[in-house]
Image (cartoon, rainbow, N blue to C red; front, side):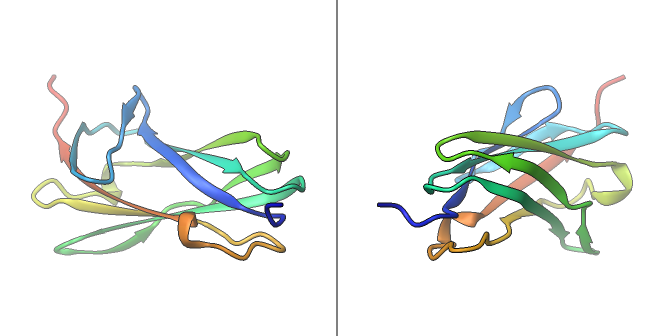
Length: 129
């Protein structure tokens, strides 16, 4: 029996559908209006509510940028939910790899939070005109 509140990150992508690989540097085209789509699965045995998703961008030569907190309103056992977290050009740099740390906040009763964090390396490219 899985404890209530087991939530883990499944995948992230940018608007346009680029799936991010945690094992490599991901090259993506930049845009004025970008977003990360974070999909979360509830592997527990209870419905979870108000699941908070946080993203912090970090790179050499810039301060950490905490993006707006995303929220999945309700997530039934076994179900997946996706939240889009927007950001723009002012949140990134082009001359360095940006690390995106995605954290799903612990829900009541959750015991294993190891799978609530994902770290992704992103190299932003100027979008061709």
